[in-house]
Image (cartoon, rainbow, N blue to C red; front, side):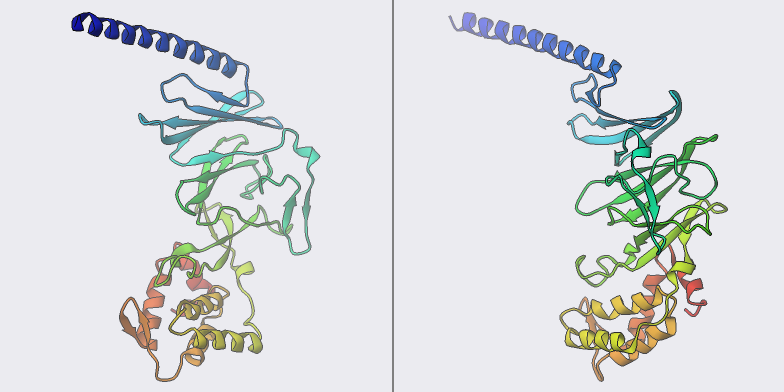
Length: 327
């Protein structure tokens, strides 16, 4: 009797598996049909479905496929770009890719403010497609990436969609998910406002870590983004502002020591190295030491440590030039 029951149960299980397989094939065939009809969001055929997003903007078609691993977790992305219905670019990235553009860009005007801020009325993306972002005279397409995880990490994939279509470069933004952009009619391309996250978690929590403001433009010769020193360089703040900073540093000397190098970096990243040294001397409480990670620092040791950290920035060479190579 028990053998009969077991055989019946096994038969039912096998029948269920065949039915499941048949339903899965029907679903996959339906999804493939949707793909051929260019639906906006689609599911490819596999046990772990891969998601395909389609974006049409002007003469461009963008397809972003998210591949899954064996556990159905995100694995990597593939972007395919078509121009005038001709395939021009395929690129694979291990981050999630995002493209959000209007179907007809002419409906969303581009304006430039008096401070050179570029405004595009399409609120979901800062960079209009087919815009000369790098300044080499060829149209570009900028795709946003996100690596996943808490507040990190973001970047821009900058493609050339002109006569020589390709990925030009990837601009890493670190913890910054978006940026402000500028267009100076006297200079080619766009200037991108970002932050230098070299100091994140350095002797401080993430929330308490400084992230100096930087301005970047594309350098055709080196094929990378470099500091726009013209926009970076700023005069030393008014004495009232400096005095306010000093009070803040002293009042929070033991609780928030990062205030000290936050304001020093603010000055250094504006090309005011000597002012940063003067600020440290005047803000440092007389006879006090700085305690970081249970280590004792006098002014000289701290300055040496800070310089070492600055030199670890990917923009260190430009920062040194901005300050006349004084460190």
